[in-house]
Length: 154
Length: 154
DNA sequence: TGCATATAATAAGTATACTGTCTATCTTGC
DNA sequence: GCAAGATAGACAGTATACTTATTATATGCA
Image 1 (cartoon, rainbow over the protein chains, first blue to last red):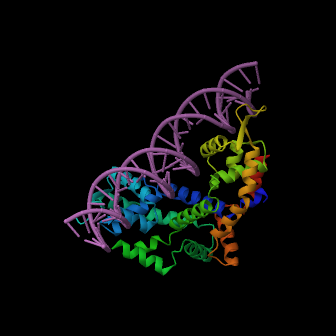
Image 2: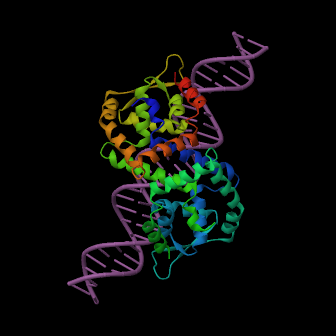
C-alpha cells in the first residue's frame, strides 16, 4: 500500500471527519463551555426527564463509563442533577436544571449551524446521501435497533 | 428538534462511525497490541524513514502533542526509534525498527480486512461514493492541500 | 426464603485529542 | 552578527472513549 492510499482508507477518513466535526462544533459554540458530547447528553436528558444513566448511554451510544464522567462535568456546571431512583436505589435519575434548559435554548441555533457547516462542502443532494450512508453503517436505519432503544428509554 | 432527529445529525453519526471503525480495527488486529493511530504512524514512518515528528503530524493529521505520546508508546514497544537530527537539533528523526517492520508486515492484511469490514453494509458503488464524500469533507481531494503536505514531508 | 445471576454506577488504567505554555534551537532581517 | 520571531518538541491540563474490576442493589428461580 503506497502511503498516499492511507488518505483514502475509510478508517483514516472517518477519523478526520470526526476531527473536523468537533472543530466546527467548538467554533460555533465557543464561549458556551459545552462539548458535542455534553450537548448530546444534556439535550437528551431534557427530552427524557428522569432518564437513568445507563439508558442515556444506550440512547446516544456512549460507553457507560463515559456517561458517568460526562454527567459529572454537567453536574459540576449545574446544568444537570442526579437523583437516586426510589424504585431502584442503584439508578441515578437525570434532570436538566433551569440553567441547563437555558443553555440549551441559547446554543440550539449555533449547534444547528455547526451541523450544517460540517457538510457545507457537499451539495444538498450529497449531504442527504452522506447521512443515509452513515446511518446504514452504524445501523440507525435499522428499525429493530431503534425501537429497542426507545423501548429501553421508557 | 425532536430527539429522534439527533440520530440523523452529521456530528452524531460521524462520532458513531468513528466508534464503529475503531471497534472493527481492534477486532481484526486483536492480539497485536496496536491501535489505528499507532498503525498509521508506524506505517507512515516506514514509508518515510527519517521523518520528523512535526511532519508526521501534518501527514496524517495528528495534533503535535498527540504525535508525541503516540511515538512514546511506539518507542516503548521498540517499534520505532527517535534520533536527534544533525541538521536541526530540535527535531527528532523517526525510524521503524526491525520489530516495527515485522509488525507492519504481520498486521497489514488484517488492517486491510478491517477497512473493508467498516464499509461492509454498503454496496460497492456506495463505498466509493462514501469515500469520495469524506475526502471532499476533509479536503483531501484538494490538490493544493495534498501537494503542500507532500512538500512538507520532503 | 435464599442464593445465583444480572444490572447500575463508580473507579482505575490506558489511549487518543486538543489547548496552552515552556525551552531549546533555528532563521531572518537589519 | 545579533535581536526578533518562528519552529520542534515536551509537558500539563481537560475531555472523550473503552476495558476491567468492584460495590450496591434487584431479580429470578429452586
